[in-house]
Image 1 (cartoon, rainbow, N blue to C red):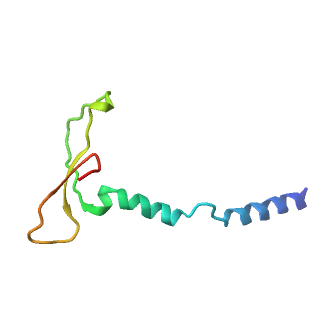
Image 2: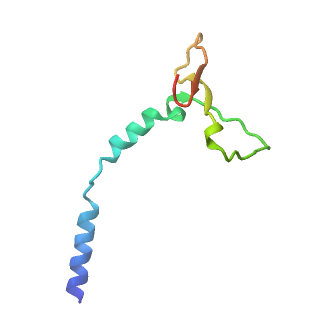
Image 3: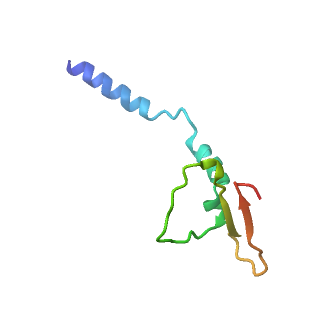
Length: 83
């Protein structure tokens, strides 16, 4: 019983070191699509919130600035992750 516990422990430790999914490239792809990561975005705070139950009526609209500090940069409007 001790030998089987040792085998299971060694096998599970060995399998935990094998990455079947390249999580670094997966994270990089998600970051490229993220508005928070690619632009300077400051979310406002509000004391009022009303939940909308019909998600088809909700559009995500963002007004962001470029991450690089440029004096003549114009705000960028992003609607549903499209410029």
